[in-house]
Image (cartoon, rainbow, N blue to C red):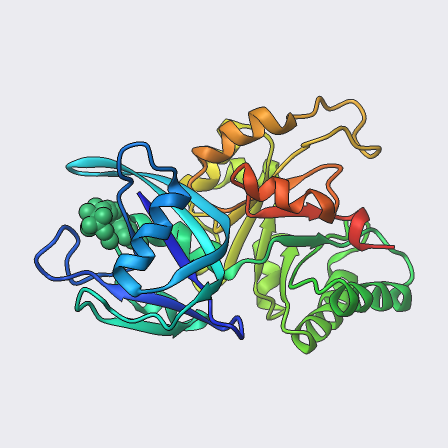
Length: 308
Ligand SMILES: Nc1nc2c([nH]c(=O)n2[C@H]2C[C@H](O)[C@@H](COP(=O)(O)OP(=O)(O)OP(=O)(O)O)O2)c(=O)[nH]1
Ligand SMILES: [Mg+2]
């Protein structure tokens, strides 16, 4: 079935509808949409459904995420699109309640069980900046601020393998201040314990660390991200409840010339069953973002493209 995350013009709210009490998953909130008629594509079905249910006309839509979910009685595939450009004022044409909800309040609404990854995807941008090794702190700050200000980066992973914990924490506190100034989120590429010293938005796990964990190491109100390279690591990320992951290397990179690239074909197959937002990493630039979205990714992650 096809569903839409319809975003308000100011980018702050998402449109939810309530399912009538007499249908499957009744009384729960949903992203408007419905089943595909024979021979329809997902986008064609979505255009028809949003017209029937809300009286609006889609002008442009971007793929957001695809989710396979096993309900006790059936398997469903949710094909979710992001819609920012539409004509008309949405209203409940079938008598259903319809409501614009601020992104930060989404998690307080009751949804069908399949929807958790959609809530994550709606809140995440299509570009994920990973900071480069940098020995000069002033230069680090100015490069980060440039990326936030000029590239519009809204999600940052602080990666600094050469720093000890104290130096890392000092850098992280300054990075957090800069991120707050631009409304961006910061995740720490570190041991989860460092979140007790810096009030960042979450933690990013290396794939090695990911594979050692039996459960989610941080609370649900923080973001958990991880590096993955194959199906086993993606499965483990899903098992411990990662909010999103990077999957790499899409292409061969100068930093890891010996690692065979995944390529778009296998990447698409892996993302289709990941069940959470996935960023393509490894030789990516922002010009790859729309292709990454088209094959099911949340977008691209990069060091070099945002860190000049
Ligand atoms: N529309 C929608 N359906 C969802 C969401 N999450 C979720 O698990 N579902 C499930 C509920 C249903 O089992 C299935 C959608 O099929 P449906 O039977 O509700 O389709 P529909 O009534 O909207 O069909 P239609 O008459 O609008 O074509 O997907 C969601 O966010 N939006
Ligand atoms: Mg429907």
